[in-house]
Structure formats: structure tokens, C-alpha cells
Length: 282
Image 1 (cartoon, rainbow, N blue to C red):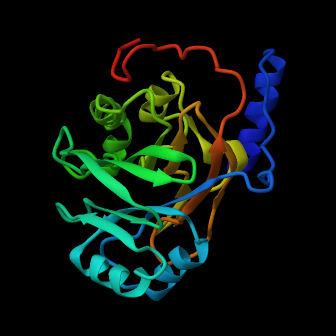
Image 2: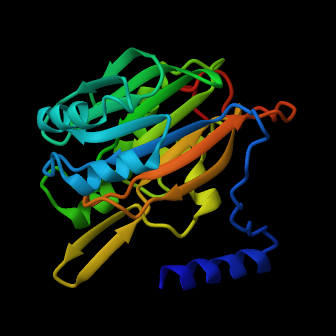
């Protein structure tokens, strides 16, 4: 149904005079060209040590792994199982499902750690030494689509502004002169308000460009499985995505998302709709 709906919307957009872009095909970097591969994965805080989830991380072979919903137990297992592959690790555990982790093949420094504006999950800004040079990374886990009273139905309608406020708050410390990635569980699809906020500032989510119909989350209900694209690897104009994909592996309710980037060698792009600092309003 989702595929048919998207195709119908594409036809309608075409009749209205709008372009309907086909998904990009993965590209291979030039010989010797430096790249950076990044994995985003909500590992599920209740599944610490799950072998299939560990194997999904190991097999992705990403240069940099950003995790959500880590716990003390998850940290112990990850350090024990993956320290050889990822000699640089750090974790910040918080508030049940609010833990964040980073696994890296190269050194990184920790910078801002944000409490969520409305007491849900935090975010974490890092500066990573990569083959592309220093890359600024913001690891996020935005407000789920659940109301303060615990309702999913009302939460669907009431939480989009909360996620926009969260990303706006976190973006205030992003440095504009660094290649930047905003990575994690956004709890919304590409049309959500947090993603729209970043788009207005020149950012793009890599996964919809290559696999627009891919789901990154699934949940079994009494009426069947529900699916959505909630996890994103968002990049700024200084980076050029070579590929982005969902890896259907692991037993978390989320799938890992993997993307690969090189530096953008094209001429500078026009200024985004919102110029100045990333927190400037439109």
C-alpha cells in the first residue's frame, strides 16, 4: 500500500508540474578517494547482548557507529565483543531508553551533551577524526510519537512540534564551518518537522535519496505489523553521499541504517533558505 501511495503521489506531483526524482544508485569512490561510512542503530534498551544485533553491527563494517538506547549492560557487551574492531568507544546512559553510544575506528572528542527540552531523551555532539578530516556528528533520539499521557493516537498529532523544538535546541551549537552529520532515531519520516527544520538549513537525509520506500522500524500489533522510516543519517552540503541503505538484520525493533560519504567537490551550493547560525528562524 505504501509503495502504491507513493507512486500515486509521484504521478499527481508530475501532473502539477513538479519533478518526481528517481532514487539514486549507489556509487563507487575513485581509487584512493577518502570516504566515511556511518551506521545509525537503535539497539533496543531491553535487548542487551542480543547476538543478532551484535552481528549486524559487526558485519556492517562502518567506520563510525552511532547507537541509541544503550544501557550499562549493552556497553559491557559491546566493549567485550567489538573493542578490536572499534578501539574508540564512549557511552552516556540515561533515563531508561535514553542511552547513547559511539563506536569508532578513529579518535573522536566529546563536546555538548544535551538534556532533552521536555525530559525525554538527550543528544550528544562529537567531533570525529576521519579520512575526510574533522567531521561534526550529532547523535539524536527525538521524542517518540507518544503523548504525555501515554497515548499513541494523540501523540501522533501532538509531538511533531516537540521534535522540532528538540532539533532546534540541539542545532544551536553546531559549527557551520565543519562537515556535519545529524544521525539517529528521529521518530518521524522525511516529512516530519524536525527533518523539515534541518532541510530549511541545507541538510538532507541520505536514506530517502537511495531507498525512499525502505522502513527502518517495525512493531507487531494485534492487527499486524506496522512499519515506518524513523531513522536517518542527515548530512550537510559539504558531504556527498555515495550510498545509503537499510540493513534488515538484528532483533531490535529498529533496523540499522548505513551510509557512505565523500567530500563534495562541486562548486559551493546556494545559501539555504535559513542563513546565519543553524538556530536562526525562517
